[in-house]
Image 1 (cartoon, rainbow, N blue to C red):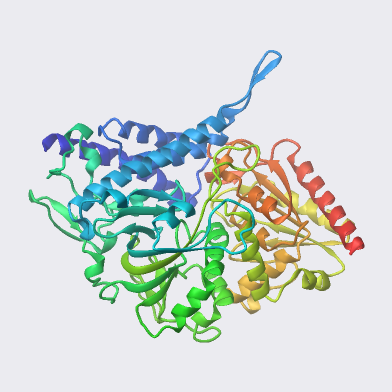
Image 2: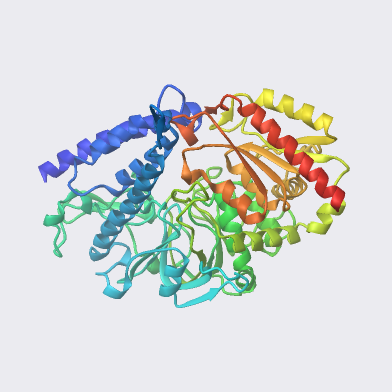
Length: 593
């Protein structure tokens, strides 16, 4: 036990070093990584952590994978010239290695979760052999579901897309991961990038050599505190069998003191999940889920049973509220009114005190919530493993049929169609520039110069330049200050991008709005050449019939986390040239119409 306590202290000391690095970037740079440091610094510490416990800590594996991905676009990974030959870089191979490490992190987290089950954590029991394993993607979910409803208009694709019904499940963690209750040890994840150590209740079984783990359990294992959150999963500090402090997590099917609901929910429609409060993930994953399950959502909202609910991301992010008001207005009392008591917000609201607010919507108090659902409806689909050419592992790419279905539904809710876009166009062409000037990461150093050149292009080609910034949406057409409601922001955003002829921006969430653009729109992305997991907008363009142009940024070991980014030599001319060509093509299309 003394050796174990020493190793724990050493591990936590190293973790505090990683946390200090991370917190410094968040406090002073709001999440960006300044030039004087690199993800290589915490990566070295995380790799040293692997030497402390004989079985890897799942969070350490997840950190190593995440930091390795950030380093993929480093200058060190450029092609190497050997005389007359060039040796290709190994960035793609390294990307696949990181992908395997994400998978390994889930494997070890699942092991710790099942050991917690044997210890009766969260009402758990020893796992049944037929209810055991991490199920990844829609087809795997559908095989374990009590019912499933494939999407009717999915086309000829073999990719599974549909709605699944999971019975007697626990929802837990930041990403609302479903898992089985009791002896059911199925864990449902959409892909390998979900950090299960931040989502599942588990014990610290990685602290013991695999040879020493027996069915008798280990009395020195403690309940794992994700992010050292003593409120995680509605837990309370108690004592373990040998008298040490331990987080005691109640069975959510037996009652939840902090939420005001006694035995979980009877029926829940799940409209949250992996990183759902991120704009890109909300647009490309939550909105398609909403469209797939719209009829079921309406049934729940009409139900007289107070324990039938819709679970959504926290509405402290105004775009969440705005899109929900647009797509399911019946969930709100009236325009501008509070949301229904049947709408449950998942995750801590930073604007209120432990999730309490003056509206009627139920909110969870913990950053790591937990609840029990008797019958859960969730959208599920398979995601491609390969990124669009030049390839490598993909990251969170929604299938084309779902994107098209979502686009059509959002256009319809906004009163937009291809014909109304054509009729509503002004005589001028339109360039939309997505600015990141107020973002903590990837601010373009040459933005002012680029905007100046784009203004000259617009002036010479009978076009107008609109500047979009998520959360601000200041553009040349309209001052949104007169009506800054979430619904107005969403409607004006959809209108802006649906009328765009060319969209320009550095890789970032604002580019997710190209899902509202018409076929043929040119998208100029200033992105990362060596990072396959950053192929999101190339995938959207290919799926929706948009003309995608890549202009690569200078390589940087901080990649996605860099506070500032810079175009390569000649990159400015590439961007401007692509914009001019896009406007030319748009002008020709209009003449043909």
